[in-house]
Length: 267
Image (cartoon, rainbow, N blue to C red; front, side, top):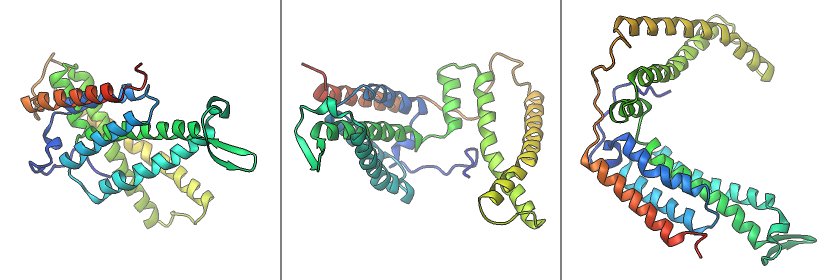
């Protein structure tokens, strides 16, 4: 499991999304993601999907996994979800549309296909827009930006930061517990029941480890006078620069232009 607190290598200048403030990236896509929930046509989600892909392909560090998600997983998800939602569409609602496929007495109307794939494309567009922030931002940076720019009380922000740190810690502790069970010969056999028994055996030591870690974190926070003062200094600055404002305004303008061109319920 990747540790979000591990030392991060500096991203090259060409992957410009990695150098933007997390709040700018979130604010740039959230309005479009909310409005896409109410869109029912095909053109609007396709346009936003193209916008998201253009930003991702030019501004992110592209690995084999990201290429697989963008070129294989998302298109496959659109096809599977589109066909599934097509079959779930009420035939009575699309009875006036042309018949696209007939098998015996069963008929598939074009309206059902359009409705199903509109749903698949809409969810794909929302996912692609969320990847603009998700692929280029870590959770700790989001919390730090919220504390520094949104003036979220640091008592809440850094408590969430400490809780977020538990996730990779639990992954490491679970790997240690599994290794200990294998060394002691208590790994068990094969099959679903043996897997359930092994998982049950991990619960108590993992819970004990979590309690010990929580106590250490609480003592460390108390020793640093956490919560004793209304403000505290920041070790990691996450500034909001002019380039963040430019990106935010350009993305909002592009979203407004796409909605103006493809607004599905305009007269």
